Image (cartoon, rainbow over all chains, first blue to last red; front, side, top):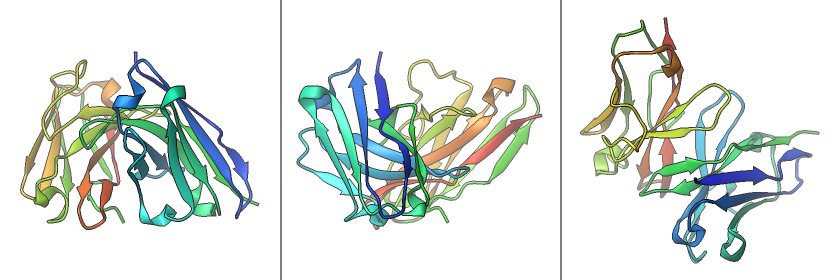
Length: 117
Length: 111
């Protein structure tokens, strides 16, 4: 059974940093692209970033470029999102998702990030 | 303002058929990129419902179907059930943005 478990969310002040983690199990992690998708409170879904199987390619939505960094450790079956210079508009539930063919076929339960003073 | 446009809400009585539209443009759906649909039950993570315009993952009832034409796509749900009450999102790829895009979501209410 595919499982994705996020952790690392919490309350952070504007301008602060946070690192999210996603532990994957139930599939061969190194075979798949992976992604982060977020959902602001009461709002819709927004793709944030994705990363190739070996980490050689990474893509970001414009609003987080230069502030967020996606990475992975295939030996640990883990996906990460380093978030710097956080803004109020980054407040959201962040989901880890496995990439299918240009879709997201499995999702974690999400971790809430709140940016507020 | 989402790149893909969905109606904010739809409703139907149990047993009825409802459709949810997803309108894009020449840089996403109209460019030939596939459309995928997700169901998000209250308080839970999204779940892939339809992939590649019209395919259902294993375990998704055949009451759910998808189609795509031109710059639009639609999700149809037949034999509406109370458990179908959820938010539904369409998703595709946009070549102008070089990234994945979602619709704003449609809340389905079963009357």
